[in-house]
Picture 1 (cartoon, rainbow, N blue to C red):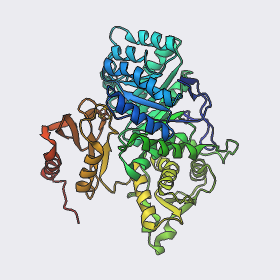
Picture 2 (tube, protein in one colour):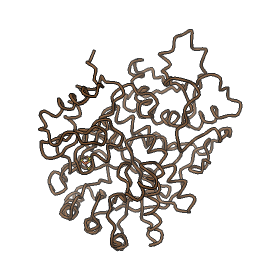
Picture 3 (cartoon, protein in one colour):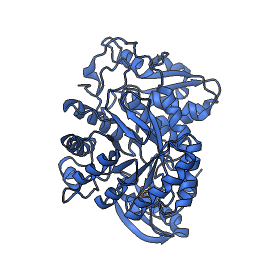
Picture 4 (spheres, helix red, strand yellow):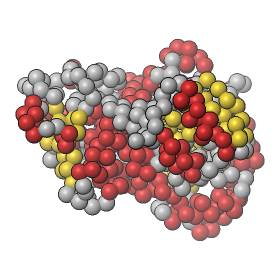
Length: 507
Ligand code: SF4
């Protein structure tokens, strides 16, 4: 049943092949590598080189650039030359969404090429050609599936589901194996953290069943910014790293790309040096559901311990994890055959870091998965360096990311890239300032109409760059207003929410 990892109660890195990206090794037991992506125009050499310089100074060594057409792909050559004059070990990755012809050019300039099987138009068997080109120059390939942009035939078979995402990747991984090409990394990203976690677990299970061992790139798309973006990424990525899955990660934030590096490094550091010798008591696996959400037996959303009145506290089992393997320790206790299931469970964990971002990342990485797997009913985070209000903010963001308690508007904001048609960071801040008091709405804030509508997944409303200075507004997946001048777009978005009866005035 849990054939996506060796054991639910001990820690081991998943054994994988090793992909070579420039001078960097991904998988094969090597440390988890962090990476990021530029948001400049790839044809703007100067701006791209300057941004990669800031990324490298922050510690990033693998940098992806968007390559919508051949001109962009070609420009990776001169960009790489200039970057390497100062940072010889920076590897460049070309992000190809649609065109095999662009991928073919990218294979002559990049260290790695990412294709999205859902969009990659492979009529005429161009994939074989791409593999030959990659093989010639020692270029790695990422099969990068995104929730919301699955190929039609996969969508018709599976719907837009974790199963569909895993199946889409498997189709291309099998072809890599047939072609005896193994310099491959695979990813299945979603902005819905639960979908993302289930999809990766299903993928590992499918790879195990077929004897495929490609390394894995982890990421949550459109995670947003600030503490919220870091918590959402840490819940998703941490859920998998906790089980030893993941060989390279990107914490995708709607902020300057260099800010992604320390957040990713903090997450990687949290799992480094974990004890592989500890084995907690075995569990009743039939009570564990790794691939779909099963509701808790107790009514209501999870609580924060600070919300529970003193006289009611006896009505809960409080279970503290004290080891450096909190997920395994909690599982071992909560899934034991003699665990009392008559009371709701509160998870308790003490943290000592005085850095708020790091505290948020660590707590999200440890606790989020427990709620994705529906094993608890409340959270009691402790950290003497912060006020109860600050701690509760982190706890609520964790519960929101795991989608078990929605306490605020969720923003599905893309990290921006060379396609972005407006300044996402300031626009997201302006949209948040007007709408963050609403409860339970999901608003997509996406840079371009090419990928935005597909990737904002299950957002209730979408604010999407249509043309320069023009915004298209969506209700769910339906376009309701095309090319509104940007200066009016936030007002029109709010009018739309009001017209649907989902608006309330801020208190
Ligand atoms: S939605 Fe468009 S602008 Fe935003 S990151 Fe994706 S491709 Fe780039």
